[in-house]
Length: 143
Length: 84
Image (cartoon, rainbow over all chains, first blue to last red; front, side, top):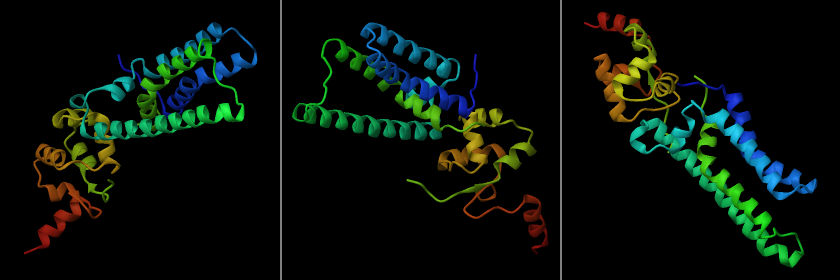
């Protein structure tokens, strides 16, 4: 089965997919909700948006398929998405490292390695594998 | 690396032969969306793909692709007829 989504629908789903987890985590922190509940709510938002975005659209395959399964334009576009993903992740890692170095000096908050640390790990686990496909979903035009 | 725009007559030739984008895509082994990108001039094909497309239409490459905007085929034919 194949289905297509318009560019606005795809972009909305990408925003929900990539921001659901961090937004729910922030909300949970402000409302002092239990960490496990926040984690589940964030993952649920991510899962729903991912299902809507990738189910039957071929976009997940597009972002993760080996070269022989794509044509020359798709390989070019997919490589561009990987480059953007690499730049994005590098920037995030550098920012996090800079924060980790500055936080003890400035007295800023740092995550508790137990509960909040596992939240960060989950955030990385859901964000990193879907980033190239999400970039493709954001950029590919409607035909 | 972004090259110069390459103009083509793919859309006209495809419709002239009654082919859908999907049918043409299957003949040259690409995704049907790539044919759309080619027809709109948003993607320049590799030499390999360009030659495959020309082979499908049975035309020389200079009649299908050009660095300059292409004249309508009818106009081209008229000019050829006038040439002694």
